[in-house]
Length: 337
Length: 121
Image (cartoon, rainbow over all chains, first blue to last red; front, top):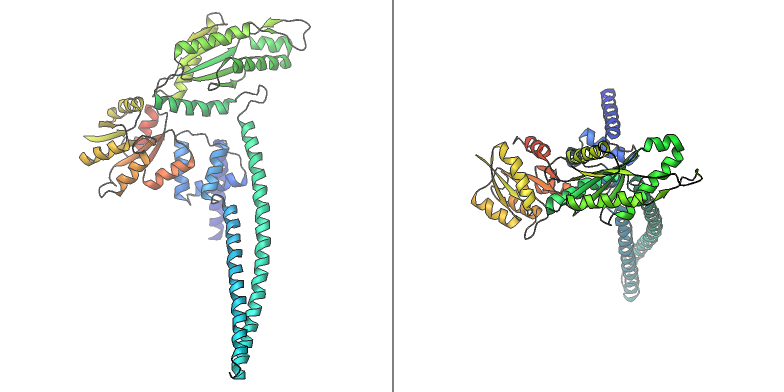
């Protein structure tokens, strides 16, 4: 019985690990506890919630995992709740202590006032006073322990705050492209879903630019990868300087970039594409390795506007097809789907 | 004929959803907020409700609680359809009695799959 139980647990743990990998979930202890519970089906609410996320292709990002862990494995602000409880317990104990002290004095007072009461009764009062005395001592010890516990909890809360800040930094890094400093593909995918959901609700136009550097392979082959990296940085900087604050420029992959333009119909998006193209054309590119300006960097751009109800992959594909036509018809141009 | 009530304050969402739901064999009604949905359910209880979350007058989750509190309110299948996709919203909808949860933007395949999962394919 025990062995088959252990085997089952092992199988579920293995299935959880495989599935974590498939969903791009890092195998940290807290992520594992979430995913193991999901696979074992122990918690119907947790299973249903993750099913909703998976079936809707929602990214299982760090924030989501943190929310899941917080919701199902650790009550929110559990440490602060403990801290509050320890303060409340201490206050209650103090009140008990005061009450006991007061009662003891009263009992002694009564004892001295009524002198004709039998010695046995007085002895009883004495033993009651002793009992109360020891209760007071014990209570004081408990109060002392409670204060130490409170201090420990406060230190733990500070550590949690520090970890939280580290986590926020890590999250920022996880959504940024290391080379160019703009949003990475992961952030782009999340933004595409959020912005198209908003566009579907509002009915506002939402456009997408796919920007591909012309002859990038030749740059790499001629000047080396360091120069290739400089070209990528130049294009990323130009995108950032050319678009508005609410737009989302991102490195889509390799030498391809993307920009999501909320509240932008196709004509205006073509105009933005044209601005990017000309802004790049005005910049002479000087590789650090070269002695003189060697070339200008050009890009080809495909543009498509989101149709509410179409699959997002199809929208991206339409922009990609437009980009392909821009390449086919001579490069250094902007073409709409 | 099976009846579907679309509750959403977005005209675009209502028209796209209607386009995908009618081919599944539903007579479709549309309203723009939770209170109008209450009135529609009093007239005729639908088989399925496609329910937005954030709406003026009465939100989707308020309507859902109202519906499930009615004597006959356990019958319609409710599919939440919203841009809200965090764990707390999903949990709140499940607890309030939602049968399925569709995250916007949806397309024909994702919507049809959700209808299929609740036996309405």
